[in-house]
Image 1: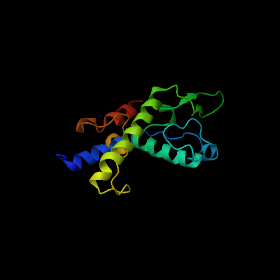
Image 2: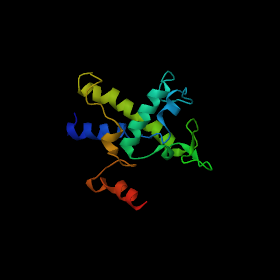
Image 3: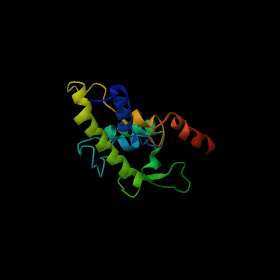
Image 4: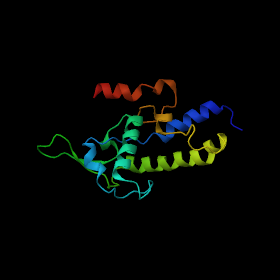
Length: 152
């Protein structure tokens, strides 16, 4: 059915983690707020849960909040102000689409390969991104984003 099950699972795991955004502001700033404009995550997801999910995405892609979220530099402020509800960045739309894709892959394929146990070996963003903004599709891509970060 699957020519190389291990490679397929590895690729699928990386794709699902790929939507990481970390909050540059203090955690408690967002933990207590009711999230707005949730389109993929459940509307019952708490601010604390959203923050945790976004931190995971951030690590998986090696990016910060401003990669997906609209931000505005504030005079006299060390950190920018984010508009987390805004859909004005294409990266946020891409992230949502990838979240849906990962969920579908886990539900429609991975769970069937592992006997329906949704807690085992699900793919995540890091499965493909491995800490890079773009998915790693060949070995030479492994350190591509890291080299870009070093230049910045």
